[in-house]
Each structure stands twice: as structure tokens, then as C-alpha cells.
Length: 618
Image 1 (cartoon, rainbow, N blue to C red):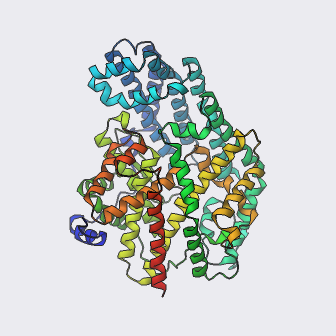
Image 2: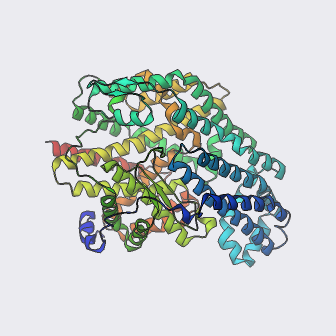
Image 3: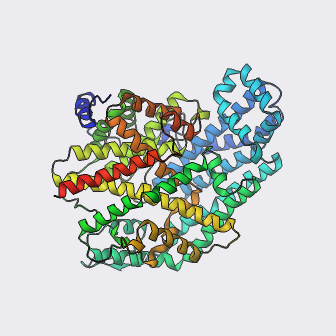
């Protein structure tokens, strides 16, 4: 039963949610992880020595439930410390990427992860040798074994057809660091060494180096001539290195295909989805529904063209400027972001609010831009015994507010998980993680529209949400299709090159953006964009952003309507962490992502946003 609307809920809850601190904590305290860099090094050395002794448990798993519990506990304890070491190294490295000692520490942490994999490579083969019947018997006599390691053991047994012998598993683990190098090379070249050119804009502004950050800024220019000049210059640079980036990405693809072949999977997609026990039908359904929803996407593109006042063809360089001017918008500093974040997420209930307040009160965030700081934003929650940490570059605008709320969705998800799951079940999937954060963005967007002071402000927020759907649903699904296509080329015995990748990517750009329907004219010069996308080095990963947005659309619709059951199912999914496979967690929460219905809900939301804009424009 509908109790009250979201707007009413947020107004009613204002008195219950105290204002954020006037001076928020804007710099994290990494001494909560380790008191100093020297302490990190000492712990790393101790942990390294412990890792070297883990194979003493080899051959003991089948002796008794107690021996199995002891071995798994020892491995888990080391992995827990390795996670903590890795978090410190990562965060310290991103404080200032120019500090070589911090970058070297990140490499040491990565090596430690690989070494742990090597020294525990015997684990899965040995569990399989013990056998399912004996494992289940052990679990029946040891509740602790079942509670902490039941899901892990079930997953290992499920892996039987794809698990190699101990020696071969050791070789695969040792190869892990090598197979991670395409991403490292991409990062080094794309973010550090690519010679970005200078460009002059129509107002006389000269950009000395049109790198990724300045490209992101100036592609939003209100001047169409400048946007095109920025696109032509930026993508012209990437085009010069098309062959190099093609060789790098091809190496990534070959690495995944190698793993799939060695582990007896039919293809790399099946290999990638197996870890989460994700039905291939979810991936295929996403692609099918995104393509079925292209008329809705094309409606948005036509609206964009109209609102930008473009005569002639809409260009790919017309995607980034706001359809509505950002002038006159309020400023959102960190304190205001905290206040609004507490307000909009109060719809989840007091438990969620209390955890968010705890996060704001601690020194958990590095949010202000500084020289040398990593340019992105992310929540790092792998230090189970401490708390999540937020890295952000807050610029007091609506984008910063939206990103802040998004990342704290991950933060509270982590806190809910650690409060309800043992460490061994705390590693939740991206499939559920992004739902936790995108739901926050939807709640924020609807709140801002509902509380806008002017029609112009309301239109701006509506336009921003439409763009969020374009980039997260349609764009990420297109990326997923691209990954599938380049892998299928290799699986058919064909060769991949940078030029071939651009050809494949161009076909997808033209289909998604309606080139043959006169919706958008795609210049082939921009089809090298695939080389710019770092996500392609993470395996079949990006599709989960799109599915998560679909789930978020369904959940927030119910939560906004005051449906306590939907809210509770959503919160319980977050509390479940990694205790079950994400597809199953979604089903328990009421959504089957292998069916069309959830995707249609997102498209309905998108059409509803455009209806509101058109009504306001009359």
C-alpha cells in the first residue's frame, strides 16, 4: 500500500536527520590501517613470511572438520591482512601519483596478492579430492565451518570441471601478475606518457595539453565549434596510436581466452560469468533489451538536438554539453553534500542513516582536489576490520554532489555487509554493488527535481538524469557488446588489430546512435574511442553497471512509493554481501534479471523524464 510519496517522506524526515557538521572531515586518516609506512612494511614482511608457510596445511583438509576449518581459517586470516595491506598501498598511492615510493608500494602489494595465489593454488584441487560428500559431512559436524566457509566450499565444488591439478593451478596463479600487465601498460601510456597536443578555442583560450582531464572539461563546451575542435584534436591523438592500443587490448583478450581454454570453458564470456554463477541469459537479455529500447534512446537524442538548437546533423561531439544551462544553480560544498546525502537516503530507514552519519563523523574521506592526486572517485571497502575509505575530487557542483551520494552508497553497502557477514562472505559482486550506489543517485535526482527553486533548475536536474541513463545503461551496454564482439572474433580464429577494433566499434556507435536513421551522424574519426576506455582491461565487467541501473530503477520506484517490503528487500540484499550469488540475491529481492520486465521499467522511467521536460517546455 502506498503510504506517502518520496517528497513527503523526505520532508517528514528532515527533523529526524540532523544537519551535517559545519566543517566536515575532508582528509582521511590512514593510520587507522597502519600507523606509518614503516609499520606497513613490517606487516608486509611478516605476512609474506606467513604466506610462505601456508602450504604446511596441504594434505590436511580431508583429515577432519577441525583440520579443514584450521586450514581455511589460516588462509582467510592471511588474505584478510593482504586486503588491508593492499588498501593502504592503493590509497597512499592515489594521494599523490608523483611519489615513486608510494607507487612502488602498490606494486609490492600486487606481488603479495599474486604470491598468496601461488601458495594456496593447491586448495581447490584438494577440496575436490576430498569430495562433496565428505565436505558436506564435515559441515554437518562443524557449524563454524558451515557458517564461515560454506559458500566458499560450495563454489569450489561447483568449479570441479574447471579446476586444474595443484601444479597447473600454481602455474596459473604465478601467471596472474603477467596477465595483469595490459592494464598497467594502458594506464602508463594512456594516463601518463601519451603526448597530448595543444589546442586553441574560439575565445582565444589555449589549452597547452588536451589530456583526459581537460578533454572531459572542454567536451562540455556550449560552443559547438569548440566541441568539435576538442574532439578532432583529442581523438586524432589516440588514432595515431591505434595500432599500439590495439595490440595492448588484443593481449588482454588473448589472456582471457587463454584462461577460458585452459579451464575448459566454451568461451571467455562463460569463464567470466562463472565466478558469480551468472546465467548467460542475463548478459544476452541486457543486450537485447537495450537494442529493443533504442527508439527511446533515439527520442532522447532528438530531444537533445532540439534543446541544443542544432541545425543539420547531431554529432557525437554534441553528447556532453548540458541540454539546460547550469547557471544559477546552487553550490554544493562538502557540508551541503553531506546534508543532502543524509536527507535523500533517509528513505531507507534509520539504520542506514546511522551508518551514513558514522561515516561522515570519521576521517574516512579524501575529498578535496590537490596536486598529483588521482583524478577519479571510488570507495575502497576491502579493509574489513577498519571501514571503507572514499576518494573524491569535490568541486562544489551538482556532479560532485551526485558522485558523493553514489560513492556513499558503496560505503553503507560495505558497512551493512560487514555488520552482518563474516569476512569470508563480505566480498560482494559489482552486480549488486552498483545497484546500491545508483539507487542513491535516483533518489537524489528525484529529490532535486521535486525541490528545485525554479523551472530552469528543475529542467537541469531532469536533463542530468537522462544523461545518467544514457551513459550508464546504453553506453555501458554498448561497451558490453563491443567486448563480446572482439572476443568472438578471436574465438572464430580471426585476427584482431586496432583498425579492426575501430571498425567493430564504429558499427556499434552507428547502430546505438541511429546513424542510418538520421538521428546522429557518427564521424569515423571518433571510432577509436574504444582505445580510451580502461574498463575493457577488467574483463567482462561493464555490463554490470547497466544491469545495476535497471535494478535501481525498480527498487527506488517502490521505495519512493513508501513500500516497506521493497525497502526491506533492498536493504537485506545489501546486508547479504557476498553470501550468495548475485543473481540469486536479486531474485530474493524480487527481480529476475534474465527477464525483460526490469529493463522495461528503466525505459519507462526514461520516457517519463522526457515527458516531464516536454510538459515544462510548453
